[in-house]
Length: 280
Image (cartoon, rainbow, N blue to C red; front, side, top):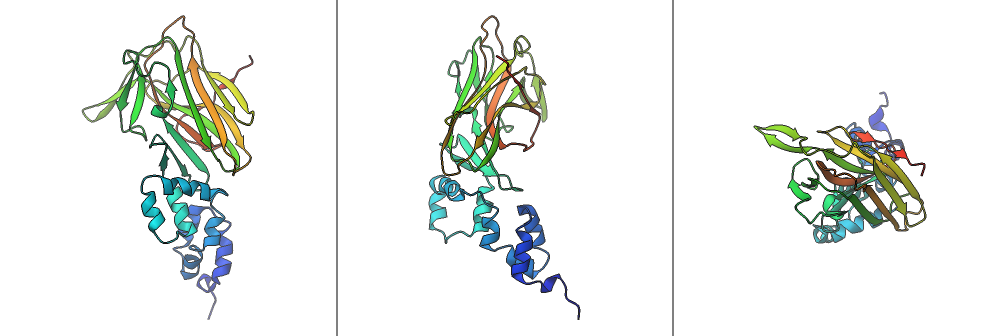
């Protein structure tokens, strides 16, 4: 009688799974009993988790549903991976992180309400618009202003790697009419006069300065604000980032600010635009 994959020892199957990404492990687990058993092994999933996953799990324990998580039986590494692959909110729900499912790398989003926006409390200039197009269900819409500046800060222990920061913005005010998405560009002005400047600095001395003209009305665009390197997974790095157009010779308006996104460098998402480094 011939020997097939079903006769493969579970330990050998686990060695195969160690060389695969998380979705591939889950698909192979459906193949036979040996791979199904190996796919639940802690040492397989611990190899896929970030090195500081215990720090990341502390946000689950301290956030919504955290008490329920702590009272459960000790979670296996596969269960931990699955939980961290779903959004983990923190800072009152204004920020969240998650593991991208393929490589287990950390991604993060910060809502517009977690950012310091010049004049945002003055309804002559800004208003918060509820929308299903934001993961935070709300965006900040700029009607008109002279001094445009959006600043964010973040303290976090990132797993070792290089990360990119993006501002997710949209030119034009969008809404639904008869079930269809409509975008009004009536108040879009001033962005073609001067480029927007993006700055990034870190607590360990990394700096980035770039600029880019905003375009593509009617679409969400990710504007690249800079990259940073996290070299110590057990050490908090403080980030400060901004986008600004503060030339007060003209007004600008018609812009939605949704969020700031932090992705592993090279991770591709919707409409990314890389800004140009400043020579000044």
